[in-house]
Image 1 (cartoon, one colour):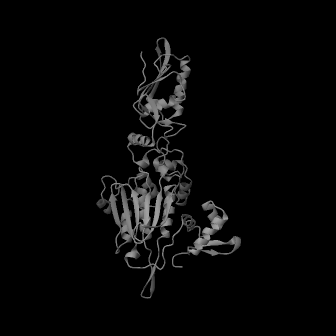
Image 2 (image 1 turned 180 degrees about the vertical axis):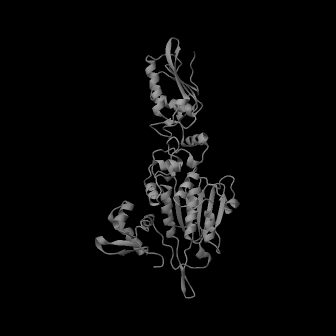
Image 3 (image 1 turned 30 degrees about the vertical axis):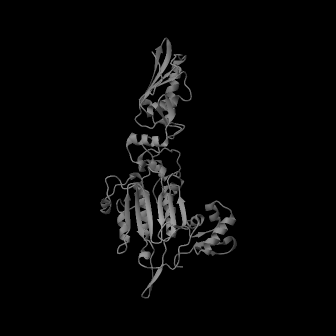
Length: 439
């Protein structure tokens, strides 16, 4: 019997540290056979304690490789020229990508066969294998990163009264049938790789840049922080109509909320780009990665037809009551502008853009105050204020910025000067309160 290494044959004189990699590579590619007791030149050297070595290989497959590969492998002893040789047959698995248990589903743990070598798979190759395996959408597919934490999500779910235990994660689609985290879990986790970028410009073009901020972490955290930041630029100018002083926000809060939710829930997370929010004097633009889902047109959307690209994420946001029902977000945006210059929706092959007009700009109302340029740290301090927390201290600022008392005091003084907060009390009892528009 002649032995020669190929893309489906591997020769091993002994069982070494690379043995599991070879099995994983065959399972992820086109299958193959590994002969133990044959050197890389094809010479049969044999194995002394064949039963012990066969048990060792079985243990490696059972405990060292995920998902379960036992149904796709066989281990048998053969006699070649009077010497004992082990033949390990590996079929292409039914749940690719297979990976080393201790390395996880990343390049250091996932291997493929290339010629006579077993090489690490790239992250792009791993994603492609996942899609080949089940053909599911991004949020239902298995996450490459399985070392996830949910510190923010747990607090968020608790605040909205939705259980978030292990079984709930399975029901919500964050854990698949084999016990692995899905990409939906990755998006909700503290390790989420995507972000939202917000930029503020003077005028109606991009030539005069004022400020910007980028939000990371769980998409739930990004939602909260981006919404707060956008609201800081939502001015509330006043006009006199008859004997009454009338105030109207530049942008309806419901439109801002729905545009941001649509961008997060419906974007294509197969791409690594960020959601972009551009704020101009006359409009806000929300740029979401990915065009419409295949088969859906803008006319369908206007008629209330909905086909979410990320059904797991959409269902979770529905359970959290962040969205009321599928396919109504665009309608609510339009209704909030009834009788005024209407929002625009631009569909491109790789993006979806929502444009919200500044109601006061197009009605000829001049704001009685200009938008104040804030540094990223000043915006983070203002984000501390909420319905539950209306007073903050210097210590709160030190904690959120991870800084000492001097820089914290400097930022607080700057916000006082800019008319964003005011100081109450003196000494150690000093607290700061947010100044509402119109005060």
